[in-house]
Every structure is written in structure tokens, then in C-alpha cells.
Length: 613
Image (cartoon, rainbow, N blue to C red; front, side, top):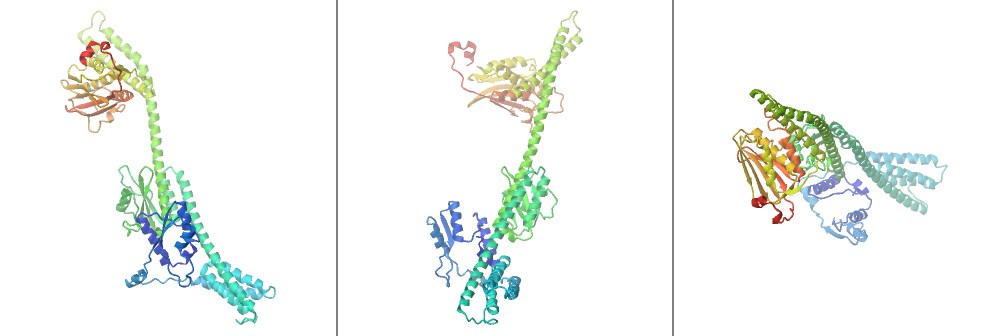
């Protein structure tokens, strides 16, 4: 409680309060520093605002000179009968044990300067009143002395104001009340004047000093709020990490008179060197511990308190972004709860700014990638459309050469056949480009029908037969496979692309196995080979556009076949993956959902399908 009474406590008592609050925070309690002039009233208001039902208090000391005054517990009970109040017994022997342990009591240094100034002001007031005595009555002279007490209370505080009250009453009695220059009082009314004057001076000084203290507390709170506002405003406009580091250093140094260093984490959660040059002696071990555990460490904490630097983790909404290293000029301010809360708020603002800059960079990079991809797709689509006509003509001319009369020689026929095959391969690449562009743009409408998987497998094998002539192809389909809903043309393209991929990367005579199994709500179609397999770590990369398993290879292709396969399978609400095969080569598995096939009449199902089932 920031009450006027707190101002009168010696520094040792205030530090004891701060250490108690710090201990409570370390043990998991939530602390609050509340301004107010009445402890009971402020506690009741705080409890009601936060829906608290229990209040725990230390038992009040017995007041020998004011036994009639109610204690805190009684006053809280009178104001809030709904609260449960628990009083804890006082440990009266704590002070004795402290002295017995050899810890001498600290003698507080009294600020004699304020009292000397107060006495000097009283002397000047007396001289001024003496000069004005012929012009004013004694009632007005009294006002001058009261004004001096008020000014001293406002400027110098409570103690000097009390001294001024007694000195002014004595001066007024000695110099102005007849008989003058004597403390003897002939008129009894002047005794009442002295009493009223002393009481008014003491009360006025008390109120003025209390208001001054509350004004100073309010000013400090306003400075903290303004610093938070200005820092958040500047951080919201920062676009670079160097700017964030400069703003953080400026505000933390200005608010706490401390040196600051900002350490950020990399993608492996390791702290790097400070973003900007700093004079803070950073301990990498303590800083990394604070980052890993998301807890403050170092000076003023329970973890390695001997360090001269306080390490505060920068906890953002998504993750911890780094550590703020603060080297204070003194550790006492670390014990003040409001100061620590302000520093924690600074750290949160810095962390959010760093995270915002991070995602701004990601957004810019993503935008560039999207625009690049869109431009590349547009270019490829335009080229593909322009290439289809000459390629088709090239295939027709190559076939025409094999039919002309007189017949071509053997060598000429081989050249014509090679031209036709290469033109067909180029046509397949162009078709892949067009299909990829249409699938990504959403222009392709799936012709989904309920049909058996066996038919599309047979069509794909028939189409790939010229390629697979030198391989041993094994087909293992479960005869109990149900009907599936898919686009037969596109699924045939998936099977053909994977079989063509196996033909390219496996030596002649190797085994290629195609199988399908029922798995819960999916059917897994597996194509595996006994070739060299996939490069390590490329299981996911090969499904990206223009990515090949072996970049430097004489094997023809541009790396679009598997990308088209993934696009088609995902359009069917399925998934596809690549892994190592038990045969030693590559294994491609794509899964299609079963769905709810319609009931079929046995008489409407062709006989070949009934036999297969």
C-alpha cells in the first residue's frame, strides 16, 4: 500500500517490504501495489473488484497510547461484512533473534537539511511578520505563520512541517503576543489561539505532505504509462530488428538507468550475439537457460542471483523469440513490483514486435513466391499451348515418313521412329504442364463415377506396356476390393506416371510390383520397384514441381510427373507418399477414400466383374 505512512518508514523497513513482495512473487503469488490513504478502504475495494472472498492479515500491534482505535481487521469487517478475515499471530521475537544473530540495527540517516531549511524559513517569516506588524492585526500575522507551515509541508515534507508548526507557534507567542519577548500569556484567549494555530498547522502540514506523496506516486505511474505508450507506438512502426533493438535500448535505459542487450534465437533455438553493439557482459549460459525455461534469471531472481545482469525471456504469443539482458545500476529497483512489471511489459512489447517483423518477412517472401509461381505457370501454360500444334504435326510427319513409297532404308526408318518417339515424349511433357496448370487453377472438373479399380489398372498397364517390356511386372489386387468413385482418365494418368517413373530409374529386368489393399476407410494402391531407390531425404521433395530425384542425370524428364500425381490424388480427397521399398527400390503409395458405394443388383453387374469379385 502506497500510503503517506509508507513515506515515513526507514529505508530498511521499506526494503523489507519489497523483499517480502519479491519472495511472494517467486513462490507463485500475484502481487499488487495500490495507492491510497486508507488501507482498509483500499483493501475492501480491491477485494470486491477482483471477486475475492478471503482476506488474511497480520495481527496489529497493541497501541498503548491509543487502545480505542480499531485495527485493520475490525475496520475491514465494518466496511465489508461479506469477507472472511483471517489474522496471523505476530512473531514478537523476530527482532530479538535478529539482534542475537549479530545483525546490528541500521541507523537511518536523518535528512537534517530539510529541518535546517524549515528553521530558516520560520526565522524569515518572523522577520517579515515583524516588519508588517504595524500594518496588520495579529489574526493576519497568524495567517502568515500558517502559510509558512503549508509551504514547508509541500516542499520539504512532514517532519520539517511539524518542526515549523512548533517553531512558528513559539515565535508568534514570543514576538507578537503581549507581553512581547516573553512566553508569559496575560490573556487566556491566546492559549486557545496557540492551540488552534498548532492544530491547524499540524493538520495542514500532514495533509499537504500526504498529498505531495500521493502526487509523486501518481506522477511516477503516469511516467510509466507514458513510457509504455511511447514505446508501443514506436515499436509498431519498426520494420527492422536493428530498429527494435535501438528502441528497446533507449526506453529501458531511460526508464531504469540500465544497460541493455537484445539476444535473438535462430531456427535451432540457439541465442545469437546481441543485435546491436552493447556494453552488457552477457553470460551465454544464463541467457540460454532463461530462453529454454522461459523464466527470468540472473540479478534479482532466484536463479543465479549473483549475476550482475538480469535476463528476461521475450515471450511472444507463438514462441519465445529471444532474451533481453539488462544490467541495472542498482539491484534495489528490481525488488519494486511495479518496476518489474513494467520491465516485463517492455519485454512483451519487444517480443511481439520481433514476431511481427518475422511474420512480415515471411509474408513478403510468400508473396514473392506466389507471384513467381503465377508468372511461371502463365509462361508455361502459354508455351504449352503453342507447342502442342507443332508437336502433333511432328508426330504425324514422322509416321508419314515410315509409310512413304519407296520405303525408307533401315537407317532412315530408325531415324523417323526416333523422331516420332521423342515427339510423343515431348507431347507427354506438354500435357503434364497443361494438366498441372489446370489442376492448380481449379479448371479441371472431375468426372467421378463409381467403378472398379481393376479396369483403370488394366488400362494404365496397357498404355505403359511399350515402356515395361523389359521389366517383370507383378500385379496383386485384392479380389474383394469395392467400387470406388474416381475420374478414370485422371487416375489412369497417376498410374501411368508412376509406372513411367519406375521404368526410367530402374534397370531392365528389375521387378515392378503393383498392389492394392483395403485399409479401414481407404484403399492403398502401392507401386514399388527393385531399383536404386530414392535419395535420402527426398521422400517429400520429389512431389514438388520441377524437382527430380537426381538433378544431374541423363534420364529424360523435367520433374512434373509426380507433382501431377499428387495434384490429382488430392483432388480425389486422397494422399500420396514415397518411401523405401522392401524390394530395395522406391515405393509409392496413394490412398483413395472408400466412400459409400451404391448398392448394385447382381443382374446388372457384368459377368467379368462378378467373377473378379
